[in-house]
Image 1: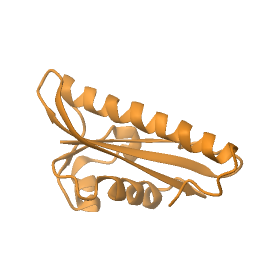
Image 2 (image 1 turned 90 degrees about the vertical axis):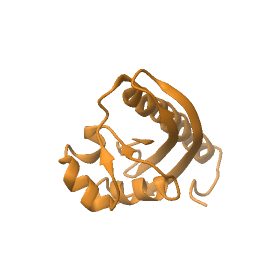
Image 3 (image 1 turned 90 degrees about the horizontal axis):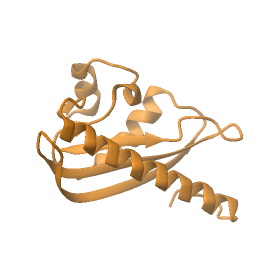
Length: 130
């Protein structure tokens, strides 16, 4: 499974400084058994509309195999089948304790990545993107 979380969906000086974290992991019903790979993708945007959020999520999960997991709020509470049709791959909202823990792990990573991006910007880096 690939758990995804996006931090930074609130404006800072009129821009949205977001970080998407994807965690590819083996999950049991009770927890995360093994983390295989983690990816952080930063994005500065003028809005947080569906196109921006989906684009960020797609980039974050690219190359990681497995069913994509994300919280309902991150995808505007869309029905699962609609998210699958937009992403073009299998998707589900977390149900088991293990799935919820994987999304929680992605949340901690995205939050920490966003804090780092903000810190780098405060220190004068021109951009958090490549």
